[in-house]
Amino acid sequence: MIKAVIFDLDNTLYAYDPAHAAGFHAVTEYAEKEFVIVPERFRELHRQADRVLRSHAGESAAAIHSRLIRYQLLLEGEGLPIFHAPRMAQCYWDAFMAQVKPEAGTREALEALRGMELRIGVGTNMTAGQQYVKLERLGLLERVDFLVSSEEVSAEKPDRRLFDCCVEKAGCRAEECLFVGDDAEKDVCGALSAGLRPVFLAREGEQADVPEGTPVIRCIDELPSLLNQCLEG
Image 1: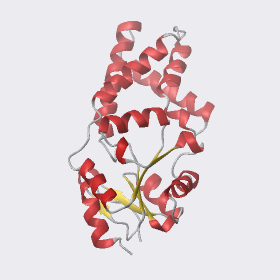
Image 2 (image 1 turned 30 degrees about the vertical axis):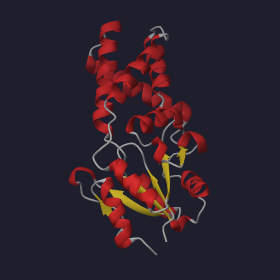
Image 3 (image 1 turned 120 degrees about the horizontal axis):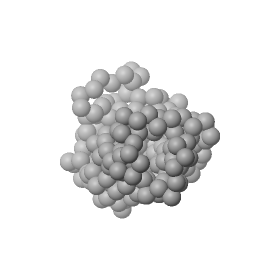
Image 4 (image 1 turned 90 degrees about the vertical axis):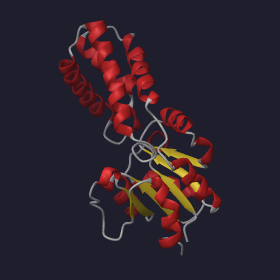
């Protein structure tokens, strides 16, 4: 019997791509205004800074998501003043967060799950601070019982350390935890290998390239019905 439902956050509880596009556009405009760096050049510098950051931090550290560090590295690489780094990060996140909006039925779905006496968690590859802000903007923070970030466990999904921590906080066995996410490798296969029961969120009608037998939903508000019909017991 399912006792806990754990959600990925980015692109699961809200649409990530429009928010990222808005944030990247804002910081690109900042670079063009302050440094006369044209958008195409900024994109290349951004890719270079990302590669340097990953070479410093490794591929399984929450630091790879840090806009502040990425912009710091970009500025250092171009010999530009690093005092712009926090301003650029704030520029990105202000525009990003303005686009973080709850999708229809998501809040109600989480309320329905809580009404079924299930514990609700979030398991996410990101630094905790930004994820709390997102959950607050989505109106979901008060509906969540626990959160596990890759920053907390020093491991990114699909590393089982993140899933194991989710199970520990859920207070039940791994097979009694449902993990809902949009990434077939990180969320579905990661959860499955750690003993949790995955559900794949297939956005915009995409084909589900997931292990056979994995339940597939198109939106979060399908989840309570799925639990009632297929995942009791």
